[in-house]
Amino acid sequence: MSARPVRTLPPTAVFTRADALACGWSDSALSRAVRSGRVIRLRRNQFTALDGKDDPCVIAVAAARVCQGSIVSHRSAALLHGLPLLDPPGRPDLTVPPRCTGDVTSALLHRASIRAQDIVEIDGIGVTSVARTVVDVARSVSTLAAVVTIDAALNRGLIESEQLEDLRYFCRSWPGMRKASRALALADARAESPLESFSRLVIRQLKLPTPDLQTSFYDHNGNFLGRTDFYWDEFGVVGEADGRSKYDQRDVLTAEKLRQEDLEERGVAVVRWGWTDARYRQVYLGQRITRAFDRGRRRDRSGFPRLWSIRAA
Image 1 (cartoon, rainbow, N blue to C red):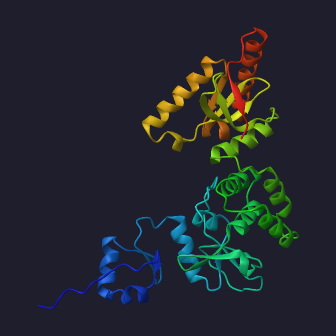
Image 2 (image 1 turned 60 degrees about the horizontal axis):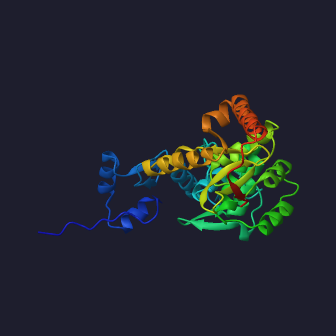
Image 3 (image 1 turned 90 degrees about the vertical axis):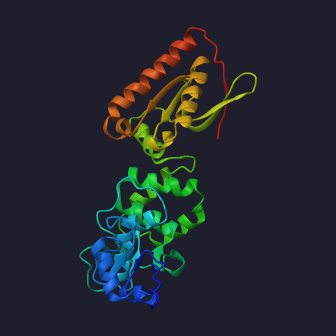
């Protein structure tokens, strides 16, 4: 009895028929895998073994393989770099040389110059570097959305100010660069989540006092009480932006509650909010923060001592 051929999946997320044949697949085996759902046909001669044919990263890689000479860029590149986006792209973003002709109906083509130092390789596909990616994103989305992505890149140490300044000069006359420059000026590496980044700009738009970020709190014996997202020392008020991922584990939620109790026992006024408040109920959020300021003023006027000390990040 002849042994069954050994079939392994190609090492890349998106592969062609030739890739499958090289790994021991036959045409009939590939067809059966597609019919069974084990392999997904993205388009003609483009396959993936991932369970998410709607995954924007997979689609972007597939589109780049189809569009010769293209580079994955803008929001699609941000996803491939693992950076957060306020809104995912409806179609994959690709950049091609300025004089490139033709089009790909399933992708959003950007025609622009790309230097060699602004290209990296992911899964065998050319992708704009993190620095070029955040500049392109900032040129093409709202300031709020851009800051969410830029903050994350800065916080993770993926970009340096020198790279951004070089790109700002290189792209200085390109569409959207004024908007990008505003977003870059508002970015802050201390933001630790997309909701913190978004909330910081909402607070600014509401014309509320500018908070300190990542402030560490201690009791009068020097014991660490916790670190907070936002803090207004003038009022003794803490703001906490509660993204859902913060509380995926029960012990994390318990620790958060205990930390808030520790702060409130020492007189700190605490206000918490989530994505719904920050994105869709901004006026209400502003009112809640303002009421917390009022509580802080009443505490100070009453003579109740501030039973805490702080250290800025």
